[in-house]
Amino acid sequence: MTRKGVGWILAFALLVVLFTYESPDRSSWTAWSLPLTGTVIAIDPGHGGKDGGATSSSGDVVEKEVTLAISMYLRDFLQQSGAFVIMTREEDKDLASPEADRAKKRKSEDIRNRVKLVNDSSPDFLVSIHVNSIPSPKWSGAQTFYSPTFKKSGEVSYLIQDEIKRVLGNTDRVPSKTNNVFLIREVNCPAVLVEVGFVSNTEEAKRLQSTEYQKAMANAIYQGILRQYSGEKAPIAP
Image (cartoon, rainbow, N blue to C red; front, side, top):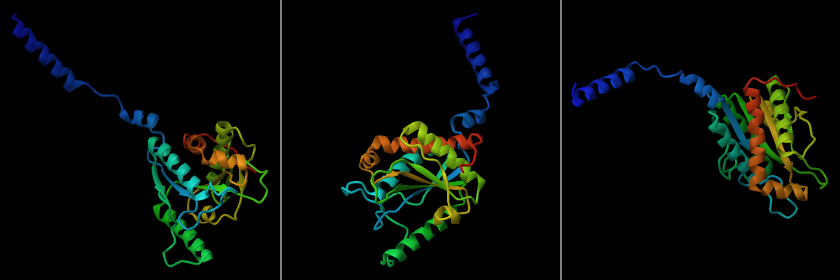
C-alpha cells in the first residue's frame, strides 16, 4: 500500500473516533468545581452614601468603606463557585431617595428599600456586612447575628462564626440570636448579619482597613456559606 493510502486510512480512523467518542458527564464537573451553581445569594454592604456608619477615633476607618470592600471580595468568591450574587449596593451610596434629607427618615427609607430589593429578588440566602462600635475601646472580635425565623439562618450563622475563628483566629465570640435587626428579621429568606470587627478598638480598626484582613474575612464568610450549602449540618447557636 502506498504512503498516500495509509494516510487516508489513518484520517478515516481519526474521524470515526471523533464522531463515536462519548464525552464524560460534565454535570459532575460542574457540581465539583462550582458547588454553588443554581444558588442565589444576596449581599448587603451596610451603610453607604451620606450614611457612613461607624468611624474609628482617628477618622481614618469608615464603616461604609470596610463593608463594601469585604462584600466585593465575598461576591467574587461566591461567583467563582457558581452562585448568582445580588448586591444591595456596589458603590458609595445608600438606597434612600434624594428627597430624604432628614437622617432618621433617610435611614428608615434606606433599610426598607434594602428589604424590598432583597425580597423582590427572592434569594436563597442573605448576608449583611457591618462593623461594630461601642464607647469602650477594649472590645474586639467579629460576631454573627441571626433571626430565629428560619432555622437555616442559625445554621449558617454558626458555620460562618466557626470559620471566622478558624481563618482569623482572633475572636471567641459565638453567634447571637436576635429579633432587633430589622433587615434580617423582615426579609423572606434565611439571613445572617456579620459584624466584622470593632472599629472602636484601635488595633482592630487598623486590621479592618487592611486588604489582607478584608479578604480573609470575606473568605471566612464564604467558607461558612460553602459548608452549609455542601450539606454540612451545624448546631444552632444558643
